[in-house]
Image 1 (cartoon, rainbow, N blue to C red):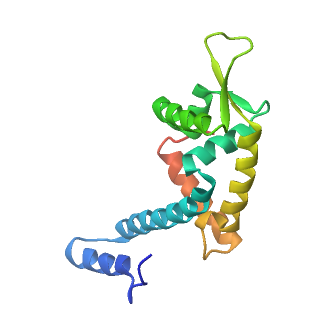
Image 2: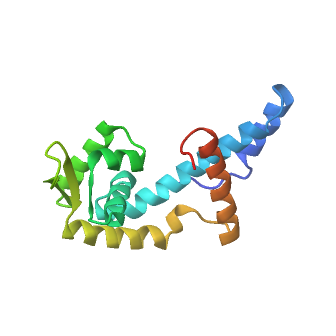
Length: 166
C-alpha cells in the first residue's frame, strides 16, 4: 500500500468538480464508494489468498454450507450469487480441481447436476471464515450502528436498481 496522502483526493476532486462542472455530491459519493470497494477487495483478497480462495470461490463455499443438503444445482448457485452461468462454471471447476466441491447427479432430475461441498471444502470454508471475520471483511472505521446504516443505504440502492424485489 502507498503512504497516506496529506489530503483527501476525493474531497479535492469534489471541490474542483463543484467549481468547474456543478454539484459534486453524487460524484464524490460514487468515487468514495469505488475507492472503499478497492480497499475492501484488497483486504479480503489478502485474507483469503493464503487459503487458496478468491472471494467468489469463498462465496460459493458459504452458499453451499448454508444449503440444507450442502448441495445446490449450478443454476440456483448462479441465481443466489447473482452471477452469469459461465462464471459459476468457472468457480465450480476451480473448487472441484481443489477438491473443495464435487459434482453429483440430482437424485430425481437426470438433467440437473448438483454441486456438493466436500469435507475438505467445509474445512477450508471454516479457516477462511476465521480469516475474513478477523479483519471484519476489510470494513474498518465504522461502529456497528454505522455499519447497519451503511448496509441499509446500500440495500436501498440495490433495490432501486432492480437487484431484488421484496
